[in-house]
Each structure stands twice: as structure tokens, then as C-alpha cells.
Amino acid sequence: MHNAIFISDLHLCPSRPSITNTFLTFLNQCARNTQSLYILGDFFEQWPGDDCSDSMSITVIEALKTFTQTSKIPTFFIHGNRDFLISKTFCQQTGVTLLPDPSVITIGEQRILLSHGDYLCIDDKPYQRLRKITSNRLAKKIFMLLPQRSRKKIWQKSRNKSKRIKASDAAYLGDINIPFTINECQRHHCNALIHGHTHRPTKDTLDSDNRLQRITLPCWDDNAGYATVNLDGIQLHYFNTSTNHKPAGHTE
Image 1 (tube, rainbow, N blue to C red):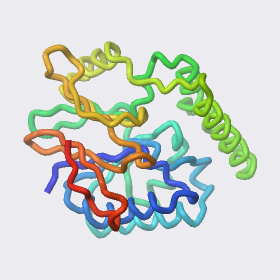
Image 2: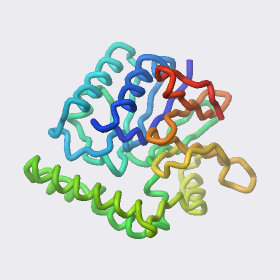
Image 3: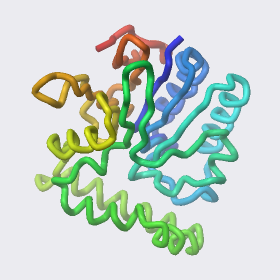
Image 4: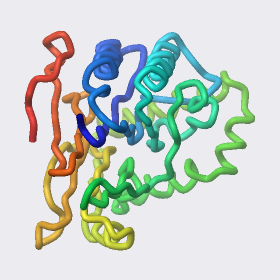
């Protein structure tokens, strides 16, 4: 039994049903072997609002509801840049609890800073300007006043633009800024960091003394996996999605 399990960057969407199936299997297997579950953002590829649902999202919502109700495992959610409009309706439907970004948890002697990770990528100036808008409560309220059809069109246009930028030579896949991140961990008195967003899974240390441990969670588009935290440390695990969605036994 793990003290906690962490996932992020699943990018669930109707066009990638295999990832949804992997997540459903994960809920019924690995996720039941923990005392708490944390979803650190970009759970969905896009989320124009809690009132904009499709068959895939309804399936996921029902699966989360069944998981939280039957397992009684506390399940927490931190917004990502693709699902920052998830709000109280989604939480009521699924039984998950929203946490601010960043949040701090303590497991044994490990004081861990949790984040989706995008706020740590301060070198990506254009994105940080956009993030100020998307994280603004008033901006969210104004956007949600638009009709569903308008919100979906705006969201899809934004996603298409993002894909074009990433496909071009001008694409900038920013990583976290190390000095800024170290300062953030020190400010919150943390000796570990778990985040997603960058799609660069790793288990390493950020400081020269090797005292500040960092886990970057994998993107499920590339190599589905999760992190576990126990009293004896943090581990990164991967799935073998080609074998009935079962864990491959690959641990870092």
C-alpha cells in the first residue's frame, strides 16, 4: 500500500481511446493500492467548462465517481493549462477535491511541493503572459458566460494554434527554471517536488547538495506512468500499454 500516487498529463480525449482505457484500468488496479491519489493537471486534452461533456468525459467522470465512492481513497486535483476551467460541478460529480497550485503535503520526513509545473517555466515569457489571463478568476467567469458552442470554438482554435507552433521550428518546449524552482521549494520549506507539464519524465535532484529531489511525471501520450511516494522515498513507474494496459514493472 503506497502513501500516495501521482499522475498528470493524460490529455484524455475521444480521439485517443487507448489512453482512456489505460486510465480506467489504472483506477481499478494500481490506484486502489494507495492511501491517496493526486491528479496534477492536464487530465483532459481540453475542458471548455464543466457543462461541456461528451461520451468520453462522461465515462471518465462516472469511473472517478465509482472509484472515490467505493475505495474511499481521497482524490485530489490541481489544474493544468488545458483543464483550468474544471470547477465545483466536476468535483461534485466525481468526488475529487480541488487543490491550489502549488500545494504542499507531508509524508514522513518528506515535505513535497505539488504543482502542475507550468508556473515554474518562467523562461517561456509568452506562455506566462497567457497564464496570467487563464488563471484570473474574472477572466474565467467572463469566458463561462459565453455559449457552449462559442467556448468550444475558441478552445479548439487555441489548441490548433498550439499544435501548429509545436510543429514549427519556432516551437519552444520550456522546462522549469531551476534557480526559481529551488527558491520556490525553499520558500515552502520542501525537500521534494512533483510536477508535470513539461513532458520530460525524470527522477533527479535540483540542488548541488542532492537534497532537493524532483520527479517530473510522464505524459501519457508518450509513455504512460505514475509516481509513488512512501516513507522510504519517491519512485517513478511506467506501464506497458501494449500488454492489456498492465504495469510493465519499469521503475526509476
